[in-house]
Length: 419
Ligand code: AMP
Ligand code: GLY
Image 1 (spheres, rainbow, N blue to C red):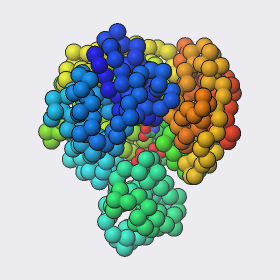
Image 2: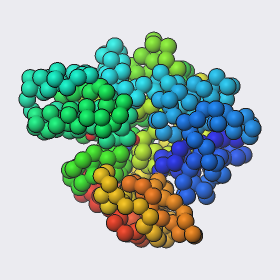
Image 3: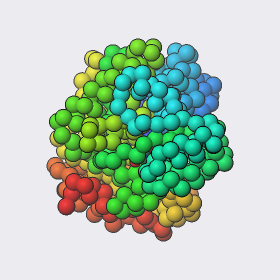
Image 4: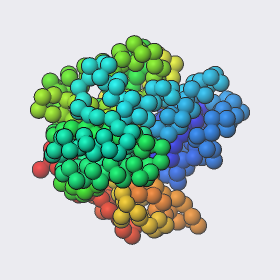
């Protein structure tokens, strides 16, 4: 199979690494990719939002499967355009991607399907939003409706913070993504990332994982795209069953609404006292969940992705390893706010020699033979071992071997389950 993978983050590096292991693969192209991915396949300089250019390339190279990593091309309808041109594609339709692209759409979908989630109000003007906050004193969560790379969510412990968040979003900071606002009840509990591969024929649960969204240790400070992940996550059988049932309801809801969804549904759960509730849907693999999850899949990942693209997932059983995996994000100082780029990175080869460790690139670039930082989240240092505590030790051992100016990471990934 000739495969074209779209994206340039740590998630796509993990996808490329897994796809490359497949005996079915003949050629892997990655657009635009990053310097780590240059070792996994051929990088091509294509705009991943430009359907016309992608179709042209796919036809020229006789690509058998396009795998879309990030949300932006999905929300823009690139999967629909590729399929309309007869090119098999892993990734939901534009309509399906609205589960992530519009929080209001997702809330209405959940209401229609009877899926438990936080109570909320939706607003397109500031005054009613402020009135709503006054009527609901205490902790609230204010969210921009559209895509905001994980930065459009404000967890507000006090009403004043919620008022400020409303003003900030309506100030135009997020462009059209901030034209509408969702304000919802604050839910307490542990989070769990529940990802399923899904097509018309069914869905399959990927290994569960737990992300750490906050920048600071002990889950403090602003939200980020994710600072570290462990898998499996620690949930009771009852919680697992309830999350599975909600995934089933989601799958059925897509069938009932005739929404073409061939890809990953990422259900972001809060495990509340009265059961799991959906915080959000994503229409793609998580980052950095994917870096921790894919190494735990023993069966052929490319074969699964291709099955989904052909609505044939029910014929493609998944084998999951009993090993645990653990992933620590190395970020640039200042992230998720402003940060400097262009710092030299050393030690990745040494880190990769630690048993069970693999370092995925996210924000890196190569210049004059040197590897430099080129983003907020720079690297994902991942380790696989027979249990979580061993995997954590290996990952942190590797983290210490890597250096760049301003290197920041959380030392407490997995603190809820590791002592
Ligand atoms: P979202 O993009 O909607 O998942 O929000 C990002 C993060 O904000 C989540 O992973 C949670 O950590 C936090 N969050 C979102 N909604 C809520 C809520 N209703 N209650 C508590 N925390 C939330
Ligand atoms: N790690 C959270 C996300 O991918 O949205």
